[in-house]
Length: 449
Image (cartoon, rainbow, N blue to C red; front, side):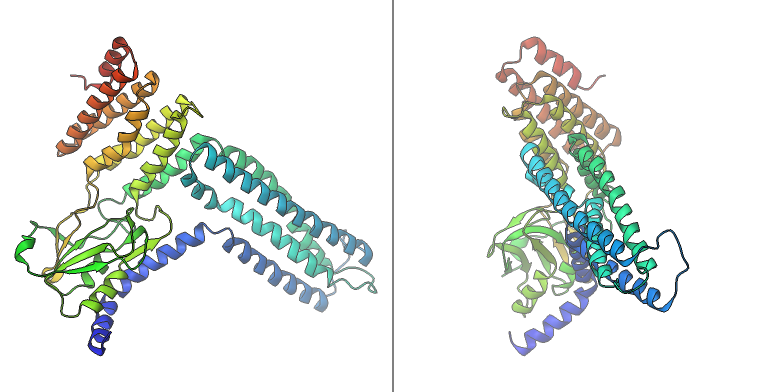
């Protein structure tokens, strides 16, 4: 990269800095949220600090006599028991967590594991057990066998941590058994997806408005273009439209060749810019910072990933190995709770005219029709042989169609819902449902005049 390229890159990075910073902060926060290490380490450090502080107070202050006064030998036995019991219990909790993850992955979908990783209660419990162990071990070093009694405050802290850990363990056992219920898993997924839907068309997570809708230009008349290629492979976890606009010269036309939730292979097009910028290397480097890639899909900006997880659970329930139509019906109902506000929400413009005359094209962003297909294409194929499941799917489609008709300006979504219903009825007839059952599904699914 030449000196001029570096100067140009610095200019672009300065304009992009606040937007890229928000992307990185959100990505970092999301990783910490799913980390089983961050919260336990914080609690471990806090326990060490509290133990040292209480030990210093015990050395400087002669505490009055109390019921917690113990001879040094008894205090050592008590602290040793607490330390041994908590580290053993920590191993049991880790084992329970691993078993829970295995069951959830096998029974529902590997993609729902993130809902267990993000459980703050479990992270706090692990940290609390480790903190109790570390505190007790350090407290042992504060006990002088030649003294008349053990340090009162230090011993009190160990007992409080031990009792708190016991209560937390009971609460965790109650919580982990409830978390395994498929309805609770789907509820958490739905709530996370609805949190993103509520921000549409623009919000802190899904993106900020960058301009007003305009007509797409004739790209063939714009001359040579610069194709920016993906630097690495990964899922598109986040994207900042403002950062993309800031990364290209004013007056450019930039077309994103991907979307949030898509998988990019290294070397494939990430964006195309017309006309070709004078400093292509600097522009390409700056544009890379506007897109965050990762090893897995996340719900940072990806509403469609919520639909994918609900689909996975429902399809697993319809498999011959599981054969659980009741769970499949609940999955369809949960899909309906996400799809209704999603179809009623306005989506970000795919052709905004931005500041400086830059036009941003995002043709790969999902529209309402594509959301409907992603929600129901696989389900209607695998549900066709289950009368009750087909009935629930048909009623959900009818509910969504009625909501779109009442809202207005959703003709494309209505046409796609009608198409899905026609395909569902055809698939049900081919799968062996009787003509009477197919007629009943159609009567329940068609709009009522």
